[in-house]
Length: 324
Image 1 (tube, rainbow, N blue to C red):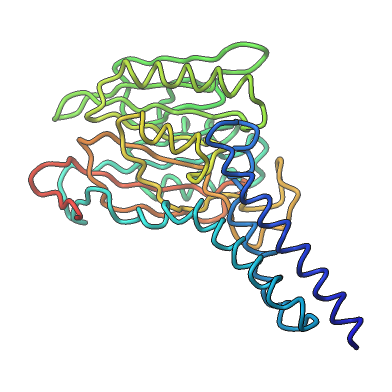
Image 2: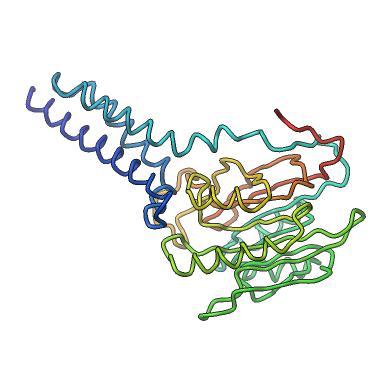
């Protein structure tokens, strides 16, 4: 029996040490894009750390303390990475549910080979969105066009769709055999013009292309009026990564999707892992200071490996509530 306890302790120690090492290495993402890749999966490191903590109870007596301390250190290291995101929930400027001039934005990576296109389009239309930002639209895009939506870029990897025609559009990124991944559409309403930017980011492991996309997006954002600007997309990037934190600071907008887990919804596309629930928040919606948040919701499974994200905004006028 004692040998079994030592084995349990050894396994627990390896789990705890592994979780701690990876979590500490992720801190190097402050300086290295390669190490920053580790930060995206930070919440997943809790599983081996918590399992190690539980197993420590059954380990040989001399091993219990060191294993438990290592596991707790791993939990703390993960908390340092992810806690700021959860502590920021609810701090955005808010507007009442009945605020006037609301704008409903749906962000959705639809997956080009979506086999539930009709059902997905029926859900999207039923939401009565003002703006749909879509990646990999495929047949869904064509069905929405048939329902009266106007797209900013029919053949693009990312696009903006609305029932109103845009005042002007822009598309970037038609290179290396890839369709445009950065698209913007400017619309006019009673309060003036506002611009919606749609993006489909590469995975952060594709370092050269990610750097190029980052530079192009920063240039576009820097040149656009920030007050009513909206940016939405599949960023393939979590809010606890240091790259995402840097863009949060630099964009001059507020990310309204706080700790909203949107991937995976199913074991399709690039995802081959079990998907009982979403465990990575990689679909984001930003809005300039001229917008207050009415609500932020995650939609249902719609045949993609991403869940749709629904953000309702309203003008941030005197009626908006600014949390302390």
